[in-house]
Length: 119
Image 1: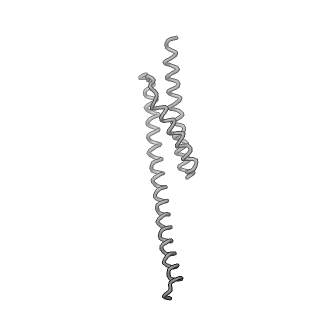
Image 2: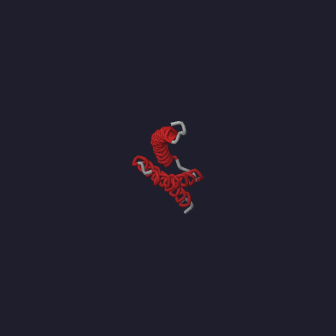
Image 3: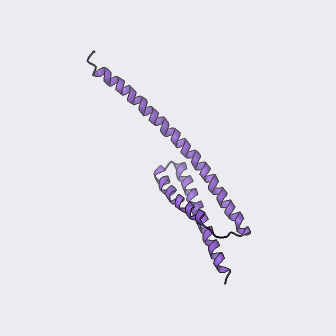
């Protein structure tokens, strides 16, 4: 019976890793779809799930270490892909902001000519 406590602890650790990994995949798919509002909500949940994983102090056996390393590898790969999608989104938004600024400059120049006292 003494062995059941570490096994239960290990199962809980695996469950926490699996939850973080599932959220990571959901975030990646949501980012690929461009659904940024849902992405932000998922990201908040993901951060809490990662904190739970990182706070885990359970001892991992050598046999289970490979599974956890695989999960961590997937998490890192997903984060790299998400980071690239976020960079692409930031580039798009920066372009739109530049366009808005340029339009505002044109509008201001046009307005100043319309209302100039020297016409």
